[in-house]
Structures are given as structure tokens and as C-alpha cells.
Image 1 (cartoon, rainbow, N blue to C red):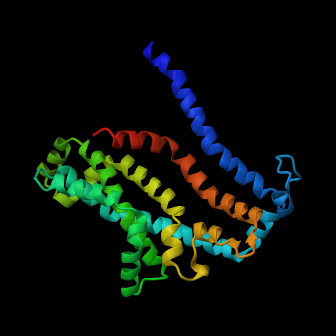
Image 2 (cartoon, rainbow, N blue to C red; image 1 turned 90 degrees about the horizontal axis):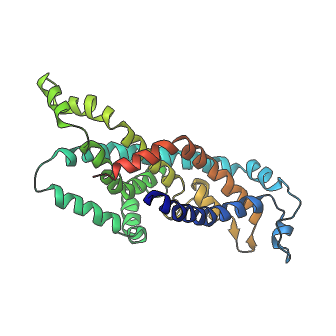
Image 3 (cartoon, rainbow, N blue to C red; image 1 turned 120 degrees about the vertical axis):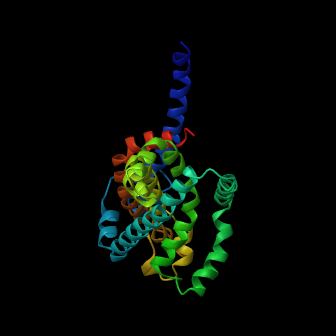
Length: 273
């Protein structure tokens, strides 16, 4: 009975969220199908003559292909770097039984609370000093540094849920710590690793602030930065901008749909402990 009483509230809450997130997406798609005259018309209406001119222009623009390739490299590279460091760190924090665990977790939480804008000047100086400014590798390092604390915090519960008896049995059979981690812990924490990798890919694909700050050459911009520069000094070509946004959202939608069940179960499991 309690569950039935709460269902209308949950349904209403979900309906509000669908409207809040769905209306902007609908507006983006509809605007991309309009002409510039329809967008700037004083009689704004959902009744118009749809056209694919904005999509034809976007696909014909060589900057779009370069931006898609750049965003894919940055997203995949950021995911790989984060997992390379976060996975062993999360496993170590899950298996360590010492007083250093609490300060380490506290530091990770504090790092997550630092605003992204507060890191712009220090990171800009570091990347410039290391010769990584305006490079894809520098942008990957900056994004990975931002997502690394979150990845460690989310991965740790997955390793903590693995029974220690399984690892002890592997050690009895002669497996070293590294072999136990690679052959026992990693396969059992596969869902958590895939969950974290999916979220990092989705977030880094649309990351904007670092991309437009650390990439000084417009031809090296990722998709998020390329969309922003569509607004010039003489106004914004709204259909073109929205067409770029729709194209940029397609890979995100594909990854999200493909990993929807994994994300819903994985994030819930990671929040148990």
C-alpha cells in the first residue's frame, strides 16, 4: 500500500523532469529544421515549412568532421587515462585497512568540490610550461585530472563488494597481488568499470570550458567549442547552430541508449556502500 501511494508522486516528478529536459531538446530539433527567416520572425510558431538546409550546410562544413574527430579522440583518451589511474587506485583504497584511507577519501571529495573555473589559470600555466597548450594530449590530461577523483570514488565500492575470500583463494594458488588484481578483481568489477567509462565518455564528449580555453586554434576545437563559435559579431545562425548541436548529440544518444541498463544498475550498485 505504501508503494502504491508513492507511485503518483514519483510519476509526477518524472513527468516534470521529462518536460524540463524534453522541451529544450524539442526546441533545438525544431529550430534546426527552420530557416533563418522563420527563426527571426516576430510570429514564432511551431507551424513552419521544415527544411534540411542547415544539416546540408553542417555536413558540408569541413570543420564539423574535424570537430567530431577531435571530440572522439578527447573522449576516448580521457576515458582511457582515467581508467588507467582510477582502477588501481580504487582497488587499493578498497583493500587497504589503514588510517590513510579516510584522509585519502576526504581529499578526493574535496577535489571534487573545487569549481572547474578555479583550475583554469593553474592548468593553463602548467600546460603552457610543459608545451602542451593547444594540443589534444594536453586537453586529455586536463579533462582526466578533473574526472579522476570522481572515478576513484565511484569505482571503490565495486571493488569493495568483491569477497576477499576469492582473492585469498587465488593467493593460496600462488597468484601475486598484481595477478590477483588483473585476473580476479578486474573481471568481477567489470560492470563498475563499464559504468564509469560510459559516464566519463559522455561527460568528456560535451566538455566545453577546457576545450575552448586550452585549444587556441579554432581548427582544433572539439564539437562543444565549435558550436559556441557559431555565434559571431553579426549575430547567430540559429538553424546552423542547432544542426551542429543535433549532430553532436547523436553519438551521446547512441552511447546512452546502448549503456542505459548498465548505467541504471551500475550507478545503483556503486552507491550501496
